[in-house]
Length: 268
Image 1 (spheres, rainbow, N blue to C red):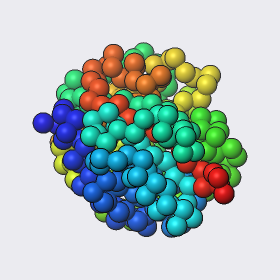
Image 2 (cartoon, rainbow, N blue to C red):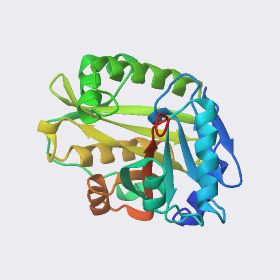
Image 3 (cartoon, rainbow, N blue to C red):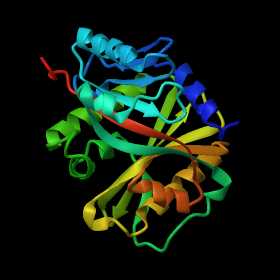
């Protein structure tokens, strides 16, 4: 059941949010609003079902406009309501990326390792707000975090948000070359999926890529998950980059997700 697209679609629909974000689910879409932050990365929607995609799309746009928020939109190939790329672009959306939703058994990942001089360890708040980690965020996601200050503001908000969310525990990991952090990744333990852990993809400085760091992170996080009694893992992997990597490590794709961005000032 865990490997079926239907299982994951129902899980998406049932999610609640106990942080400062506002989560609303209707018959046709699910939205998340963050009152504390503007910008599309902090506000999102997913579509589910409906007979008139364009009408539902206009409902969503009106909802976010009323809140004064830009947002991202996710479509999945398992949905009964599938929004065509042309329709979204005609309504002001830009494609951010295409992702494979992938799953694997923890037992098949715990022995993953590679010969490396880098070390992996868990990160604390001081590490997360340190110069090395903020530089990784700024370098790997310049569109979202064009400056170190922007990366710092995001990380402070994330730490605060996670501390208040009763449904998830997030553990961050760093890869170190001597005393310097050169990559980071995270695991999320969700109370709504007691046997499962979510891995977030690794962010690696350009000069350290293609050195097996992604594999190191998968193995280290799998061992941590196994110690906590977890048996399954899921990950949203970029179709053009990390998806082929995790497929070689034993993950299988359950569904494809397209992420789009809608900026509030479109047609204003």
